[in-house]
Length: 117
Image (cartoon, rainbow, N blue to C red; front, side):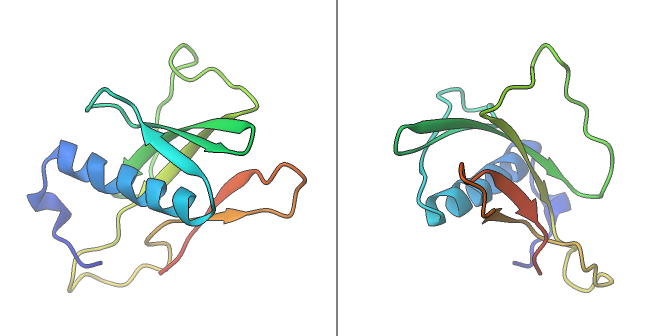
């Protein structure tokens, strides 16, 4: 996907990131619903009896993302999905562009992110 990310508003960039994570979770068999708050970056995914929270963070560069303990308390069914936006057309290629979600061969099918081109 070749997009001029600088031309998009923050809310449009957020929606692109949340949509990508939602699509990947649905592709893996999860039923996904978005928060009712339009500004939220929270997805709730369910597969069978298991339900998880996925907090989406969209970044343009590989930099530090801040999550407070109050807003993101660690829990077994709470995840963060980092979406790194690919470079704009004509920019130097970066092997870490993009985002994917993969299943691990663990009994509870925990999610982890992997980079894709």
